Length: 442
Image (cartoon, rainbow, N blue to C red; front, side, top):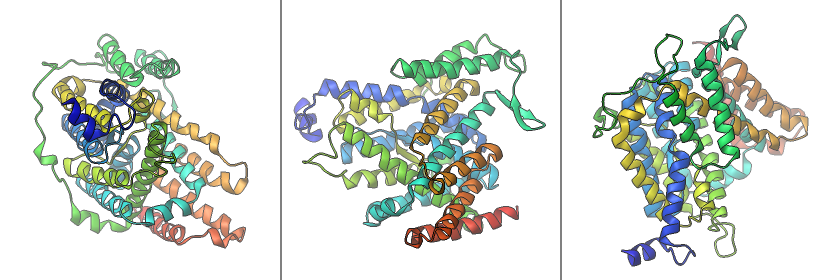
């Protein structure tokens, strides 16, 4: 067995050992296991059953990670992405007013486009021609959007005459939520493995004795802590192509955004992890294996077929690379641990929204830290800051993105930087302009 694993994953060739790969897999799983609780909580906002989403989240993570482990053989784990699940529930279902089945169709088409791009040289052209300030704006704006949802879910931000106000500190649940955010930060600063997962577990336990706004304990334990998983077969290929094409003008910009978001996030994540592991950016291996991009795209297609949002590479895989993971065996261990976790679905569904909300806030703030890359020139800094401000104030990310894209093009035209107005930017501008017109008619 050792010899077979060594040959298949090239463990010795990559200067690693089986115990080190197992340890790296355990580290990666611990750092990203929180998604099993957070993703179902977010998707429940789209009217989906939380138990169903726990199972489909695990299934999507297993499928995507196995693909990366056994085909590409890289120490990268995949799972439903934190940005796409918020867009799925808040933007596609709630703001675009379409059914979850249509939202899954959006995920499917974005995954198909990603896979096609990964098979062509167009992938490199898009990376080279897309404006960095818009990429930065997308990262920080979606971070603000995620943090905003977390603040509302935690009960820290409540409706007021001015839109949102700070909740009363006399409520124990608000104090607990604030403590959860501080705990996330503390565990991160101390570099405690699985810090986000530990935070969720501690807040869930505290919720057994701390009452919510209704006076009942925040955490309600299920009758059984473990049970054999029952896959929701009605979530297999849950598509609605008729409604998708009926609302194509409204959904096409969202599909393009999810495509671009996954495209750049996956590219950045996989390059960061493989460079840390010495598998890319070296004289022997200067470029990332093209199969990695294809695997990420196919994983999104599989995720949609299994009934979850966009499945993508997780930056938490970097913890495995830092722990010495160099091969797909690390990812295989992660997939096996996700499979084992599915028998604890009753306990996962008992996790209250308040326990996962601080994680949303923390992840959103971490994404906002990309503001350190903000340019010191007005024309490069204004569009991403505008996108961030509009997202925070209005809660409408897609309109904020559309306004910022059009503003960026206008700045280029005023500056007569016609060489920067690429066909990709023009196409996106036309698409987002149509989206704004259709959104105004709702």
